[in-house]
Image (cartoon, rainbow, N blue to C red; front, side):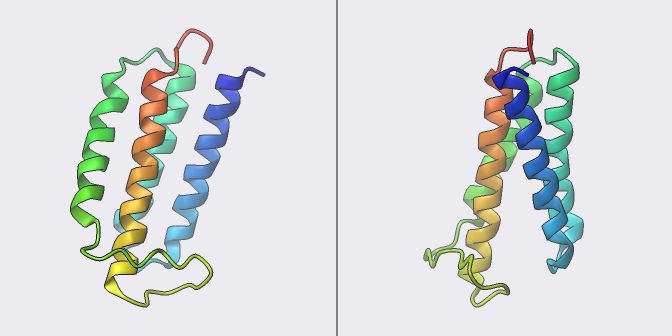
Length: 116
């Protein structure tokens, strides 16, 4: 298996895992589709030769959304504790998730399609 295909499988699995963890979120109807869209686009990258714009346009949306949610004061994401301690931590988690999605979509956009 090529490195490209391994990267795609890993990123799809990661996005599916992130979507699964959103079930206990206060607003899973928003966050589950966000991760599933990226998983779906990873699957499309493996199967089809889509234009880079298919990945770049949602990456721009996710990035701008992440910037808009970025907390006024960074308090971290407190990964060792569950629950929302402050609104800044929740906003930090949400913006970090959107930035991770942005990065993965940009990787999809610039991976060559011929072997993927």
